[in-house]
Structure formats: structure tokens, C-alpha cells
Image (cartoon, rainbow, N blue to C red; front, side):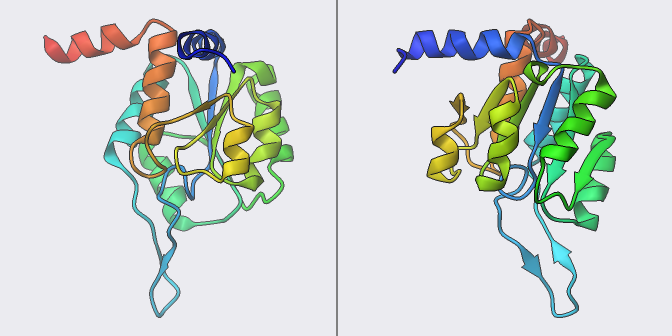
Length: 181
């Protein structure tokens, strides 16, 4: 196993190349809990820091996409509010969505990162240039990740990823300085 400093350098080198961040929804952008009322309406909660991190990352030129195994109107609405145009829902086998996304954006798999939490995410994690698991991901998923966040899904893990990418690409300090003016 690599020493912590070596591992961080390895992750930062991979993150420098990224042009796309792909996110799972349930368990990554949310805490994975599914709430339904008696009429079948679905409710999800999203962390505001994750949303702000996504907006900041997109301003640096990194595209953000969602590939989810489930379909949800709530997800569609939240992604629209964040300006995310690449939304793939209902893909239990996420490989075709990943291939289409890579092709449409004209990038290589090595220029994409994927954040996941469960077995459905493994096929993309194995193909992406940077595989990331949230802190509370399934143990098998963590074993196949290049990096695990310190925060759990729906609890700021996505913000942690966005900040790491912006740091690796040299944008983070400038963004912080803009807020300090």
C-alpha cells in the first residue's frame, strides 16, 4: 500500500487530467435513503455544499454528469437547478451511458472520474481515470476505488471531490480568493 503522501500525489495527478466528473445519485448526492408518501411521491435531500461545489467546478471547465440506476423527477429538477445537462437515469447497467457520454464529449475514459457507492457503480469505476467511493460506500466498492472521501454520501462527499479536483487543477485558491475580496 502506498504511503499517504504518495497516494495523495497519485490521486492529484489523476485529477489534473479530468474533464468530466460523473456522479451516482442515491448514496452519493443523497444519503441513499428513499422516502415515499402514501401517494407514491418521492422525496430526496441534497446537501447545499455539494451543489455549490458542482457549480464552482463547472465554472472551471470541468463537465459534470449524473448516471443513476433509478429514475426520479426530483433528480431531474435538482440537476436542472445546478445546470447539469448530462443526466442519465434508469441505467442499471451504466456502461452504455458512460460510453455515450465519453463519445459525446470527445474525451477519453482517463479524463473522467466517477463517484459511486454500490456495486452498480463498479463497471464505470473500473473504466474511469479516477474511481472514487464515498466514505459509507459498500466495502467492495471501496476496495476498487482509487480514493475514498472522508464524508458520506449526501453529507458533503461530492463537495470534497469537487474541491480536490479544483485543487489538483490549480483553481481552488483563486476561487477562495474571490470570496475573500
